[in-house]
Amino acid sequence: MGKNKNKSGACESCVNYVFDDEEECYMCMVSLDEDEMYRFYNEPHYACPYYKLDDEYAVVRKQN
Image (cartoon, rainbow, N blue to C red; front, side, top):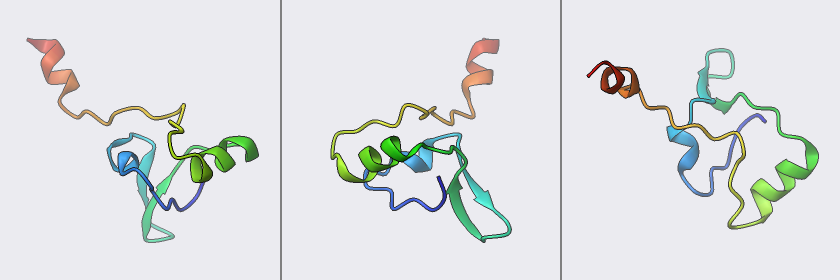
């Protein structure tokens, strides 16, 4: 998907939003198709189907 304007702020908490050393910025690693990209940028209530919470404590909670 490339650089993200991030209209909702949800991207920062997604596992697919990672730092790219070559570009020196955070980028989404999911390749959205043309229709998904249009909806993401133009529809205010569009929810990314690839969003997955980057919950670094999930493993610890499962161990309890």
